[in-house]
Image (cartoon, rainbow, N blue to C red; front, top):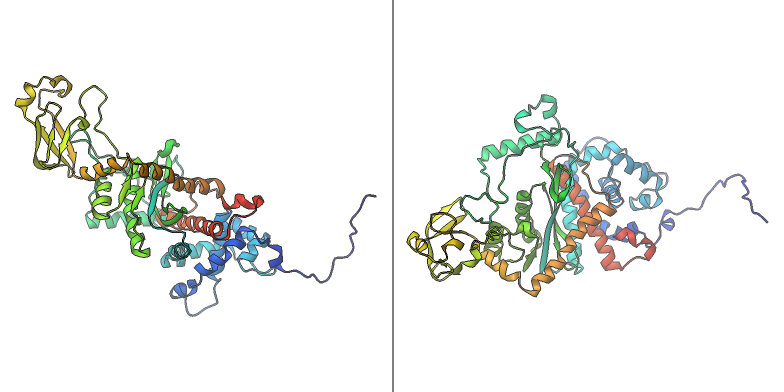
Length: 476
């Protein structure tokens, strides 16, 4: 017999406990204890940024918990986030909201994120607390790190870019936060007399421009001028920011995160910042660093080997190999004891000691030797004697070249994919492909929240074990 629901008058009282409605293996329940520990001292740190008089404000812990929910489930719009928290029982439980508690208005988030949270750097503090929790639980070994960067599209139209000399900031534009930050940073750079530095790496000629030499931008976004005009990773040309992750290879815990414009020069420089900060904040200094060829420049390798004493598991960026049948630099033997190159015919190439372009020494053969050389046709392409450029950090490049032939390097090359998987999961499972906030400080806030959520997932997975198959996708 077909059943039919009896629609009697609803019960006057209900026995309902929110805690009983959230499954034991739910993602938010599994990360809740770690979040509680990370937010333990948040009120104390934020106290100086609140007035001692007036009405009580919205609890900042509630807003942080709601933001964590948003970045867990790809709800980065504050308006939509407040709607979902209002409807979803698990979200309410995680945010410590009862059924009849009112969800904060979406405008409250903007006010706090752009002022108190940013001024206090509370998101950075929470990120570091989560990393310290991972360290305390043995998930961070500190033996091997990997670094990489991924382009995140800026919240700026790719069709409205302008050349720098076409920009004439109006008073209304100057009042926008992203533009004000850009102009303040530009003024600070001018006052400091900052001169563009190179990224290292020698080329086949002494006047070869450096691979990552900083150049003035060709196009600037009027709405988000700190973003960079880029076409990295074979994507369409767009304005973007670089999401830089430094991870501990053992369990792919993100030990540092940095926001930069989407330019390789800034991304390589950010690695120095992250390594120094990780050593200072967590007393972590890896024995080896894995990265791709973008980081294999002479200057960076020299800093890594000579100053930090870290073994580079990084492919060296080469420009000296020739494809026209002429001898390359690798055909010339370096004699470290005498400080000379020896050509294939056994003649010496010496240097005057003059540094060219701030990074290169030129080693020249004698014109007399070259004129009578029987293999001159394979060596010299002009009437002049052969010359070989040598990077000031060539010794560090040689260290990296030797490591490239080892089994440890091959293992690091495979392990480096873990940082790439972090980016893939962030874009695929969290919908993080485009910025919502503008300016470098906005990118920094968003990247910290993304790294916090990914580390919380790692803690839940490694400490509490894998969830049942039906919920495993949430932990990807």
